[in-house]
Length: 89
Image 1: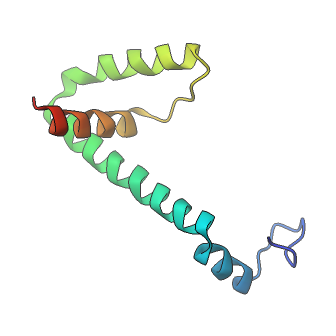
Image 2 (image 1 turned 135 degrees about the vertical axis):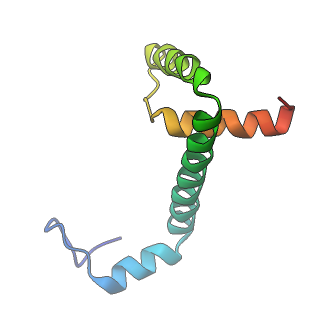
């Protein structure tokens, strides 16, 4: 996709803009939005209920043993926040 940029690490602006208009680009934008939004929710949840942090850390450690990748407690707390909103307190 970035033919003109090659392996220089530089991406011409027209290639960058075209990549953002593609399906993968739009999914990437949505993913960045979702991760940031979840982190914000996680920050609020941990501020309100700091007692959830040990469970989040333990869940992260368990997932790592199953070849998961630790993404950080804010995103994990954001996911927990969405689950709490969907399924009640």
